[in-house]
Length: 68
Image (cartoon, rainbow, N blue to C red; front, top):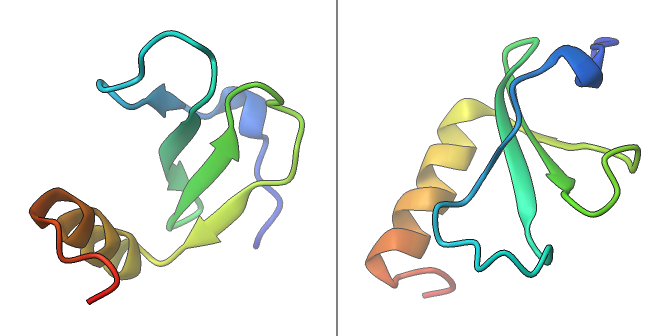
């Protein structure tokens, strides 16, 4: 991944987060990639995905077809 200042990225948590702190954050603006990180440890490594791959994952999770 190209060097991106992740502190300046707009991270967001799931609207289904229950406030326990056990969730991930997603950012759409990581040099053309989608970033995913642990919300409890913002300095931890960031996983990145191609936007199309992320969209496929989200749709599968939304429709309950993930892993089929």
